[in-house]
Image (tube, rainbow over all chains, first blue to last red; front, side, top):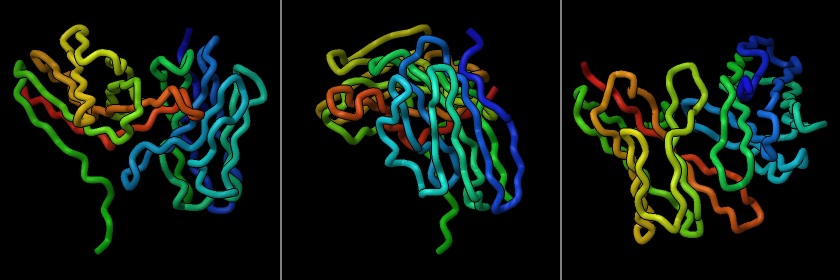
Length: 113
Length: 115
């Protein structure tokens, strides 16, 4: 397996624009996680899914953020409208079940100007 | 004053020495713990894990110790190499509650290995 695949690797956008980050988890993994990493707050869990169902979205900053998992092999994180404070590295991760480690993608570095 | 971000603990060691990275976790109900290594420009990568029914687990050059009494986790790296330079995160999971599967990450420790 190629691991968790995220796209794009880098995204630069203007404030107010919609941004969509994409993730393909490892095949067979039941859990999918979206994290955000910044110097200010470290690694924060935004939302996670189990078998495509959102379980905990308490980490989503505000209504501008939304995430979907339409099937077991694809998830999106959308920010609309984007703001400069959303600039961060966004990681997607997946795990086989609740008692195993998570495998992280390479991340998407988002810059909102 | 203005916040400049997290002040990550740092550890600087000489190549060949042993390293010990410490982590205090918060949830006494956590039953699964993981150490991750994050190199610059990459996502965190699994190193070793331990379940709450154990107090020690060894891997290749790494050992994790768990002290549930004081909610403390440590990662020991033997014969540290320049390639070990990275940020190290501990993560805790409480798999018996409604948020099973979710990891809570610590702030991280930056390890620098001097040649």
